[in-house]
Image (cartoon, rainbow, N blue to C red; front, side):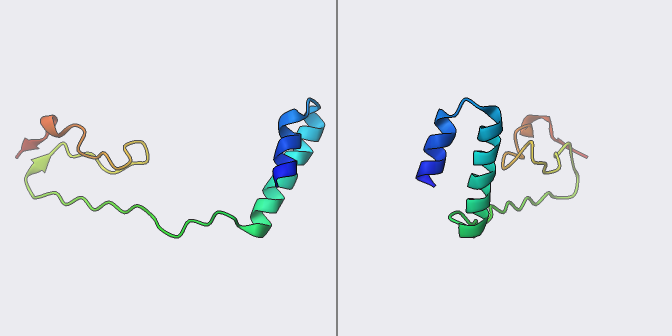
Amino acid sequence: MDALLAEWARTLDPTRGVAIEAAVIHRLSEDLPILPVNYRIEVITVGKGLRGVPRRTELLGNNSSWNVETWDRI
């Protein structure tokens, strides 16, 4: 992998660069040097009568209370 990455950094030929990138991805998919084993979970509880609480999105990530000053009680 080190040799592939070093060659990839040195190559100026776009076609060769794509081939090296493919070889790197192939090696990563075979050897699995990185495998996520945990996931970040966020639980947000919202009481009845609150308005303006945003839904969780990838854009907000774990920062779902960013606009707490705009929330209202109904």
